[in-house]
Image (cartoon, rainbow, N blue to C red; front, side, top):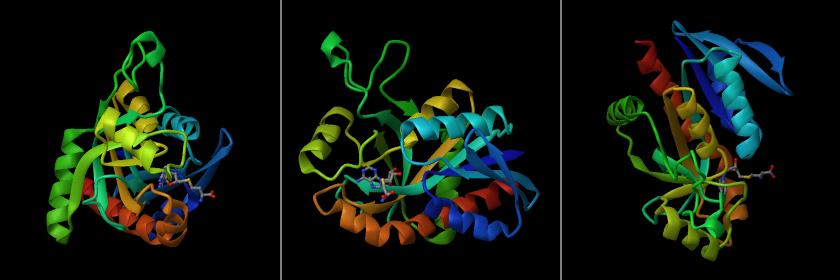
Length: 230
Ligand code: SAH
């Protein structure tokens, strides 16, 4: 089995590469991909760079070029649901693109003809994450993640995203990765640890907690890989 593990930023995959020890680096389409064998499974690890376009390119490459059969995303997000505190984990049950807007034509936010407002995550991987959480004695909240090409640090923007999508967290890559995996019939899992709460202090909170939250997410994802390897 070949599994893709992706993040958006170097800090999100560094803890994973550290665990792998040795890996082979391949340059492809302007990005680096790290291949390794880990506990009997083949892994392809990469960070895409920030945003929907780069993450689309990386997810597509991991599936089409490297032949990955499942995709796990590990990273950080801005929390919306007040139950989510810094460092808490959220797994996406479904994802949307909060900045996809052709409402001028009477469509709902996040919808374009031929697409859907939400893309649902793989239920088997979510079930597995519940087992892993139980084993680790960790709480992993399930919820809606909204994705857009913008670092949200404003209550009004945040409230609008809640209004349209009832989202629990927001970030800049999950929704696009979900579209790719869904179209290509690849089971996917999007995990995020909270780095900020998308309010006026978000950039300060992000700078302070991004690295520690990225580690929390990466460690959980590697436990998922351990279970998938069994
Ligand atoms: N500090 C970085 C930019 C970070 S952008 C730099 O200067 O290069 C924020 C990243 O973390 C994105 O990959 C996004 O997925 C996630 N994220 C965390 N908090 C977010 C928020 N409040 N709004 C949007 N994305 C957020």
